[in-house]
Length: 279
Image (cartoon, rainbow, N blue to C red; front, side):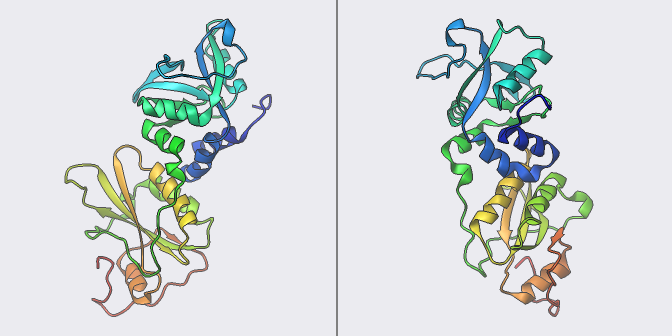
């Protein structure tokens, strides 16, 4: 990889291949500047930035994967050529073209097609589903959700305790990686929830003790944790009552948190029957 200039998107792809908790950095990188893609060779467009009009045929080269047809997108022209060399494709068969990244994401998301970033490259590759591309193109993914006021508890009822062996590993790891970067996160638990409607996706509740609450930092956690759910899991994220020591103590007594800040000392447990996590 030393012969390539490594850009921000390269770094984000490589980091994300190692750990899910950096998904927000990938979202930011993929939303900036131009993206490169492969298309059938046409001499008249070589070296030009491509624009599309309504009704134009989509130019993106695709491959078939388990999720269906996926467009090949690349962080740079060098990465696109890296794949072409590895695949032994002639430069008169396929050519790299570019367009603004948000435009490509909007087009592919709108037609319901997945995209693979840096397929066949030494950086590793990342697959993006169409709904995420739509949210990236619209900017929805970057809009923080309200965290409510201190003392407001937005949890759902019906928690079930989980054995640590039952924890959704990808979600827990992604959440842990984000929380350890910010002092606002004091502790966190993972619980099971009944799916809605019954029989649908397996559902978990991530309960966070955050003090003080910060919607930007919380959104960083939400982006990373939701990205780790995959296609078969739902995740609700709520707050433990940071201004209620008895409630927090009962949370610690009822279930072992998977994350506790190194400098956080939990309050002493209250008498039995008071302020239990389930309400």
